Image 1 (tube, rainbow over the protein chains, first blue to last red):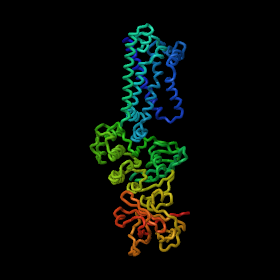
Image 2 (image 1 turned 90 degrees about the vertical axis):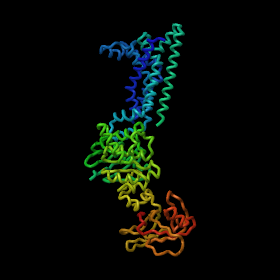
Image 3 (image 1 turned 60 degrees about the horizontal axis):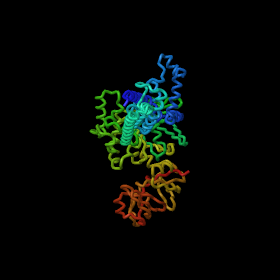
Image 4 (image 1 turned 30 degrees about the vertical axis):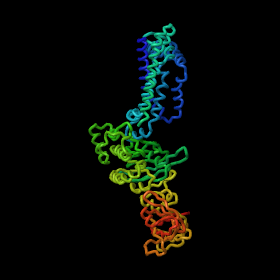
Length: 220
Length: 360
């Protein structure tokens, strides 16, 4: 087992999940509650990474963040390092690719909470943000938890965008899934099978936890 | 002295239904009508959950909504207490968490004291640690009421406050609710489609149908004297028959209904073509026989029972007295008289209990 790769993978999955919770919870709540007609476009945009090959997302991200891309120039102008082949680079790519895995379950969880609870809270004087924190969030929690676990697990297994954006820098951008690919290329099947088995076990556990969380959410 | 509510507004729906509400009362007002008539929409507009298209809503001297002045206060700014039809207690909070929800910002001790006091007042003390799904329907109703009252609302809105409960619980809670509404000191608007509930709880009744107000007035008056056929149907007057006023003498009109003549008290000159309205509770049935003892009731209508249908504690008896007349009598009375289809009876109705509606 490549422990450096395991550490990178863990950091990437934690960073992705945390960022998507921060961005995704308000966005998911907004999608679940707004009556704005244009929301279908936002929904489509959020879902897009689900149907695009991660290599395509990685390719455009590489162009945008490269020294000649708009994002790359912006980062350089404020004195930042260019993103490709760095950990922040693969984190950005991973966040983009995982958007649907977080926001779609979040929005579904909020949508399943009866609107009357929020209305009751407003009539009792709670602000919109107060209602979100004290009523909607706890009631939607099982679905949110499931979405977060799914995002984490999917990031652990992410390959395409990490390879495009990060290459294969040991200890920095080399994740477990890239390590498996690398080991196979080097004909080191023993090492590849250890890592692969570990990933299968982790993925299975994550899916079980997701289902348990959703089952619990079904009860009063 | 309670603040008065002054609300006149129109809310339109894409389906074409428009709800036009006009309320100007202190005290307890019941919005009464069939489902889909716009009762709940009216409540939601008052609470600030829906926005009317026209009109104004004022409480005391404060404007909550004014279409022309573009004022529309949010629910949080209005201080309304809204009791939802199925109570909408927060399922993730305990009873005390629910009741203290609206008291955020107060010191904890003060919150606890107020919540305990209100629960005690509503007769549901000692449930603090339970979750809503562990409560009976009646307990949920009172906890929800406590959650609303503990915030000292300036306007109380009740959406079918007793409908979600089973009949015995409803009977038990109704008097307590009436007493509470009488002492609360703020205007109350409640929505109901149950006649008993409206009469028992409200001072004024507003009859709504298809988004429009058809009649308003004191509860007992509206139910006994509907002003038109629609209201008579909505409030459920059992007998509504077309008739013709043939003469009037000394404030009593003789009305021909089919082959039968019915006496009705009148005030002023009645129109010729009328509907005769008689509530089922107002009809007394006398066992057969051609001998009718002297009795004060002006209408003594011999006839034959055509149908007998049990209805809760009462029995609905249809008697052909030249027109179909419906009487509501108790079960023991029906047994004593041996009421079955075919039996001959005499129906007694006081002239004051016969209400005339113009048929023009």
